[in-house]
View (cartoon, rainbow, N blue to C red):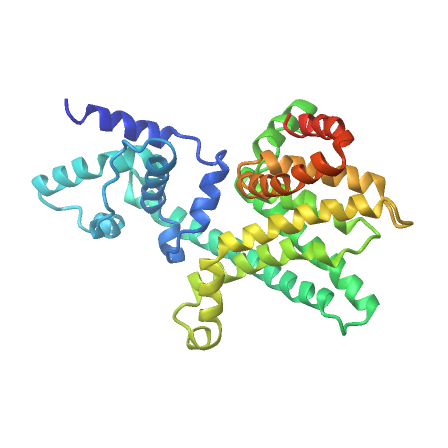
Length: 346
């Protein structure tokens, strides 16, 4: 009877909808394990329970992952084991089998899907790494001051196009496509992806890749995101390479240990871009539609869980510095600012 609450908690953890929680994708992407381990269902479900314990129910007891789980697929090679050992193995692995689904019930059917899942995951990660490495190179070319203007502008456009393609492929891999191409199905699909970081950056890149106004400042969030993806991939897959250890390990470790600083820098650049677009309305290069769309995106970033913490902190700092100046030198702006704040917080 004492274990009944934990059984209910494990059942609730197994039934939780992780794919529609953007925190799970960010949590899973920050776990450093070998690719052949990341494709195993028992490893994935172990980290799902740890995620559930951390974000949903701290009362869930998560047992440490033992080395015996690595020999679980090999049980089919010794079917003539004693009845006592088989019964104890079954009782120990019962919660894990219950949460992992029908694919792990028989060892004969789990071998082929595991290898294919490993191959699929590896290919997807490799493609993402290639795209982000390419984005990193062309973004540096776009920012470098000695590059000719035509080449710099082309690299600027290609950098945003590369991040847009990378974000779109991540959305398809995680959420698939709408069940049907009608208004209701598309709305349901958009509701599940609109607050994810990949969707936000996809819209962000579309806003600038279609614009004739080339703001090199807009490449800062793109560079930060590409750096994070490249550093994570190199640490996961090339940590035993002598070339990596000699030239890249220190830089990759620095990037992964400063992801919070990079996110803060990205949020500062995104808010600064919004202010630059407002100022650009006074010039001949103004684009009213782009400015309106970008401020709608900034509003979404302010409320989306993936970026809300950084953006809300930046706007709070701006408010603490700007409000005294407005009250002292422009008190007549208090009413329009309050109106804008009401629209912003809706």
